[in-house]
Image (cartoon, rainbow over all chains, first blue to last red; front, side, top):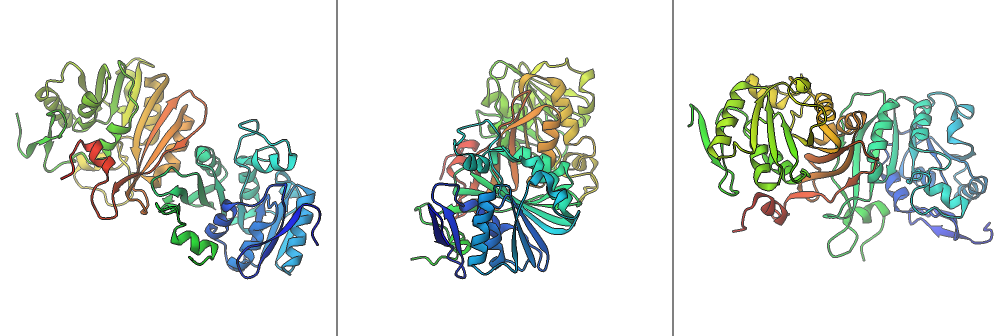
Length: 245
Length: 245
């Protein structure tokens, strides 16, 4: 089942395992936190834009009661690997991995046919910072294939009235995210900043935005990763389903 | 010097005192924190939009090296009271209180003649929540006379190239503030959330936005008011210039 440079990683939740390539982009804390934060409607249809290894659909399949979870991915080899992970976990009945471009969702799906859209997009503007020479890694970190506006446009097309887009992004892009979502009728409803320590600046934020609703944002209590002594906080233990030693 | 229902309050910094009316809107923590947060250019001109009692100009006069500080206020009785506070502190040479409407700054000041604009505006949308029957209090809490966009428009007109607007506002208006500022060429550069306790949701935020500059926001470390034991944090002691007992 595994190809060269691939390994099978235990997701520490209900026996889930995921295939990852040691030399490519591997999932991080952000995907795990987003899967725990997204408000997924029971019995609804959910789509993950830019699913990569398929980590978010896998986690949502055990954490939520979504009826169908679709993972859309542009890179063919990642699609194929994510499909093997889905099959390995016997989740073919609930998760579908689909090869396609976020900019062309109208060719793949019906208008307003999803209750939820989730996305852990590339964080950096194309051309900014250090860009990996590995094309696959570069695409997952930099806005080469899609940017915040492409995701907002896709979500606006895919979501039913009052459907929810859930994302994770970096604080330095906060103005971009909030303005673009509002522009596309996706009103930010809750936002939660993730801080490495309680008194340190946040390095990520989670957001739920609802289609066609009134403005009123709740900035939630901070999600703190570690206590002052360096140990993970109780909440992080809970999200990861770990037991404190 | 004091009229009916007025009292003289000690600002606990360099002997400053301020006149306030016991029955009207009195300054709060937000004005003090904003005065400490605003990045004021030395030798520059600064204007406070909606100065009320004049608290922000008074604090900026001792905390910064601004050459001239103007407090603009629409309510005539507040202007008159703020002027008496300025006179009482012998700050007539540096602070001027001007009666006028934020929506008509072009009739009062030259275009692009200020290095800094600051504002502690009304937080609530007109018609939302409980609205005071006292017109003066209602105007300072609700967007009756001016809203975020009026302030952004005024700041865009008044600020020189690369000038800075500094504001304080409530987290539930974050999307409004960020989108409106960007719309008026005032790019949010730093933002700091104010939390009552480290693990509680923020109830205010401070923001510095610069005119005509590139997007890149720094979400700073949280400003925490109280430690877990209920005592003010060291930073709050420092901002208020208090000594811990």
